[in-house]
Length: 162
Image 1: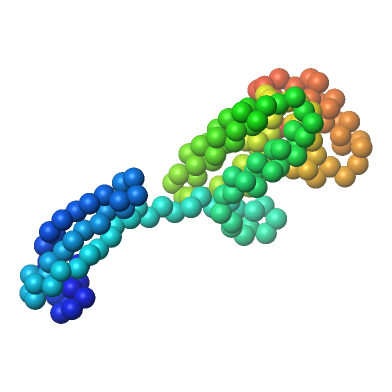
Image 2: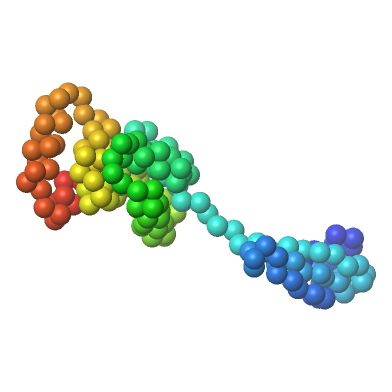
């Protein structure tokens, strides 16, 4: 560390202390050139997971609350508990973090696909509701086609479609 008084790069650590549940380390330092004591802080720098939008390729931070709103809307008036919704959100967030681990980016298409897989297992009506927005259904025939397809879907063919 550079001494704030004399600008020397030579110092020694006098004391270290963990702060904020170990997320920050406070270090008391003493400059070896002028004996001035000063404090430095070390924090883990985490890059946020960015979602690449399919419409214009812009990037925005992964937003669990936005995901929750979409899932809540699809599950509106459906017999699914809040605990089940929280579990799905936890699983989705963890999967997104794992998929975006190396680049800190994930496509919105991939997030949508993962949501559809979870909703398919959780509630088929919510699956169709979410699919109608995600796939941008424009008429009733698209709903009917999705429901007819859903009737003959197996778990393995779902992954191929999404």
